Length: 374
Image (cartoon, rainbow, N blue to C red):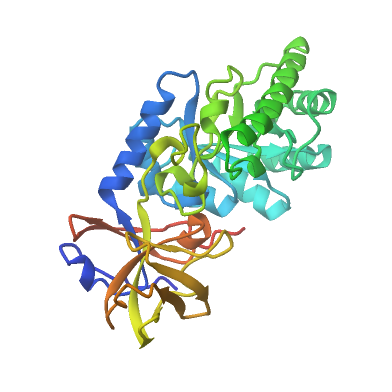
């Protein structure tokens, strides 16, 4: 059930009901613009990943700054974006099941939609859905460039699958999906560069073998917030699928560049606003944001601009914090900003973004694709 918004425009931030999902609009807009600046000298374009923000509003802001389209992981996310007016969407994932594929093919009547495949049986199912809907669907071959998750082997296996797609009158060979997810959170540049170097080599080799068979790759896509600067300058990747850069969660902030600074100098713009609900003693405080309010799969949230306070444990409705011995404990009712460890699943817990600037609520944006698992 869609929940009522926890705030209204012009309200002070400290009046917002909690837990609430805040966007610091100044930091958010800086991140949007900074990605444009970083990609400008390269040949790569941004196809921002909407699995992070799940919002046609944010997608439009990205596309106003030159993004060529959006990525999603689920058909439900594609539907939310297409119905919200986004014209170019790639499901950067495999879609299995006749009902899901029928929904995807139906979207091709209102937007350009594409999907990934790594198996001939899957291609046949996509072909059937496209034929039934009377549309032609672009299909990218996903190759495993080292993550060991989805994807056909680079080289001959990928070429054979591409030839199968290209031979169909209902499908269009769209290129390669070459995402190395496990490289995104390697902390040092050297680790990330090694892994992505291998991914680039595998992608380059596959592109050349496809070219020899008369198949051009309109898209060679992949990369994420942790590695996009490597792929974008590779001369192989032409679409960058970064998503978390718009928010910068606590886990991504642990990645370092060559100077030992956080990657890309993106700013934290997403916060869970929480209220101190109990102060049982001077060293412990409890906020009203636990598992149901913030994802902890990538580590506990940090307390914004309060390093002397550590969020140490979550239960369903409680977040336990330890307070340094030399620090005064937060007061009962005090509002604190939490920086999520992992932004994507944190966003999926909320119906609304509360956009704030200079301590005041400026806007409310619905999270249209929240819960879009199908």
